[in-house]
Length: 419
Length: 159
Image (cartoon, rainbow over all chains, first blue to last red; front, side, top):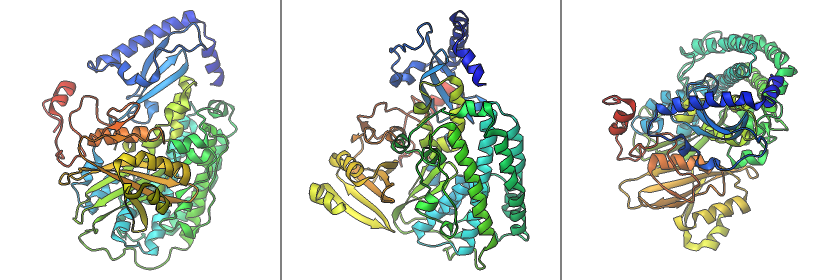
């Protein structure tokens, strides 16, 4: 595929003119559906007047990618300003999946809002629920019992694995490697089966409640988890065998979408993207929540901050997750799974911010209580939304095909971006 | 750190406090960008976690605008809060942290709070041309911009 791109780069411009016409036509067609919107109005910051000197013969063109584009992982629309194959700038148009989650929260009780958070990052619903439940627990000043915390850690780490597996499968598919998708979805299924047996749901699990867990582990839960760990440990090696030294994969990902540690911090980018740029920061270590302080694990980091390093970091993270689950499942303490929480949850007046390390980065909840049964304000700090902002910086000067690779490597979920 | 800031700005820092182990301070809107700049440059709060707002319609200063900051060096969080009236401008923190760009756009979209000096302040989640700011308390939960829905979606109502 690398060679393919090079071919495009050296394409004679006689050919290019025809393509330009076609693509301009496409732009017209897509703007026709939004008659009052001028696409140029979105591009105020892209400095349309400036000519790039690298490609003297080509004309700049603006094309739409998405919102109905399989590689944008949902309904993300990216307006690209191109010079031939080179990206001069991008503008993200988001909000197609906006459901007003934060507004809904103000009209529901604390317990009623709990299932809604699963619908934000729907591939990591357990993490969302954990963050929300812990935030309300902080507000109520109650602690989930140790047994509940261990169950929470096991399920959340299983969910992290599921999320990373889905990311790997789809990201590799976007770049052109089809096989990993079948491998990862096959193995993710085993995690979903455990979720289904535990709480009856596979994706939007609603596994936790404010104050602990509602469900006791089913008979054979530990055995199922151990069986899964033994099954999946060699499988991660298999994924790596398919990709890590694969020449096409390396050419498509190495040096693509580079972002430095300083830029990550300035842009508020967190999660594996930040760690791949060399910052050893993970909320599970920095500000441990649930029972994470009981376990030994490493924070894998990268060096170059490119797509390839982010891939390596996530692969290492999956192994660390397995390590945490293995430690946790062997010593789940006995005891209650629910703290003493009043039937009607009425936190005292005040506001708190609580965040956890979701698979995609820092997921935070800022909750304001006015002393009633309904939250006065719930603000969700979504990692995908903030990370997506770095897209423009990461793809400038690169090729169109790299935009796909970078969207994949940012690991965004539009349900969380738009809320 | 807070004592030093208080010394420098006197009554500009209206309150510094801790609730459930979380530090916050309330400052005057006029000095907030200076305070944020000092927090980043001198106290290592280099990561702006979030910018958001809360609406209190019964108050004279209707809005709280908050910055949640984190310091990688000290592993600490702090919330900086200002109170402003409806229609009052807030100075943008985009020059301090580029991440503020989208976060401030969302605050503008949801609350109608304008940020002075923002490079590109426009709606982000709702479509351009939508009327109303949904996270204001006077905006009903099933309320919609009927006119926008009728023109753009070609249906009588979104309900």
